[in-house]
Image (tube, rainbow, N blue to C red; front, side, top):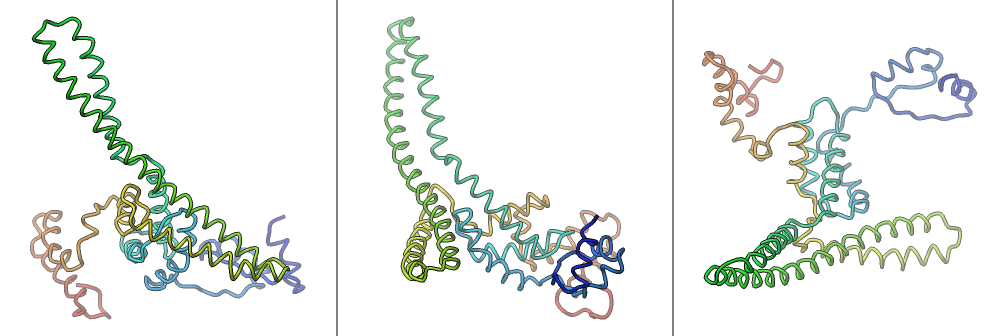
Length: 310
């Protein structure tokens, strides 16, 4: 027995009130084939939201993603997600594709956050190289003549000096890295704690507990969260802020379009349109000029809206 046959009796008796969401294709495939089931529902078509509406939706869910990943998402990143997903990602609809963009950008940054910074990695590799060279030279010094030994000793002194400087830099960088990483982890734990306290404040029947959570515990935790977010803006080793750059990189991975092309303004793209078309269409100079002129007129609002472009 399928879901339709289970729901139909309850729907016909008025025992169940149901609101469902589906695509037109799936509605035709699963609902329309059963007229008795279809009669129980009234279709309400919901159009794809505009870029502006998508931006409102993204702003509404931003906090949940920030809390989940322990990151900060800039408003400009949300604007980029709405704009670039609309412009470059085909076959999907807003707001889903914009939300997925933000989610993947956050996940990518979260993964990078848990990886060792490049500065530390570079110094550690250099330390290994110097130690390997030091061992090799110490072995050679026993087998070489006096002049060569002198050169080896000078080189060993240089290595010891560089190792000492390297160690000092590594110590400072590791301390800063652990400090920044600790702040990020605290922010994530605090977000989970705030969510749990809000849920408890809404569900508990003990008014005293609810009041204590609502007016003392939650505001204190939110104050600390605000402080941590401000500190995150000053981090130098771990990137804890999702910016338009991260959004552009995700779009580039999905579509294969270079990030540099996304950064070009509409005006620059239109100015280079004819030149780009000439590279792809050979021997059709007049046609290329006519097409590019038509597109420029349309973008400038000079074309006839009731007629096709060109």
